[in-house]
Image (cartoon, rainbow, N blue to C red; front, top):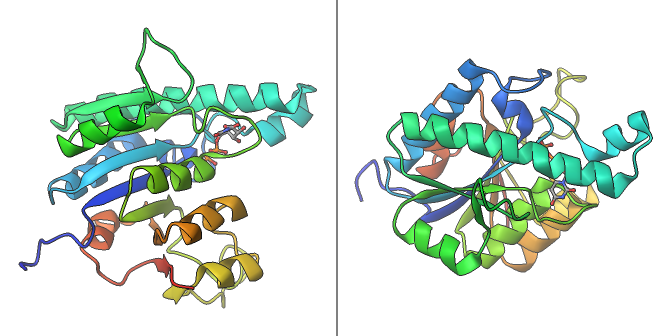
Length: 242
Ligand code: UDP
């Protein structure tokens, strides 16, 4: 094994909406978009198969939006899913500017714009080292793109789910509020669930636990972190085991 041998062969990467605009921002910003694309390039250069689940929180999150505008929650959730399509299309262009071959597959059918999500077709793209961007979450309201990432990791037999965040990993308390918050290096699924640690939705953790998919939480805004995670370096937080 040389120093560029990846730890994982196939990865699902979850990028929240704020990855496209920076923490607390709105919409899509060129600099953020290109930074994400550069990080992804660093990973694909290692020869891993990569599918990216994009969030939509930089435009709207159903639960907040429904209350604000008096819209029924499922409708707001469908609007949230459509927001993820905006990010997916922007990311596709940014990745192609880096010379990567990509496909967007959406869980809501938008046939003029992208392919529908079809598991076997997605699998084939990945085998051919195309980066697949998964849009519109699960296609169902009342869940988030975290749950989508966990489900796709299970059904596509991914070796790991990488969750890109704005902090370095999982802490015992909110690092934005508590300067003494402690970063976990390794933690079990049950510790996350029992401790109500804010990693992903409980249902997403549960799916990963059932299918034994490790989750690695890391900082999207640390240059090179994504690549180092894929190389198996001990950065971020590794969620796994019993
Ligand atoms: N959403 C949904 N079903 C899904 C995925 C997403 O209803 O399978 C909606 C939901 O309203 C969510 C919004 O899309 O709030 C944006 O996704 P998410 O909140 O996961 O984005 P992120 O926080 O990762 O940016």
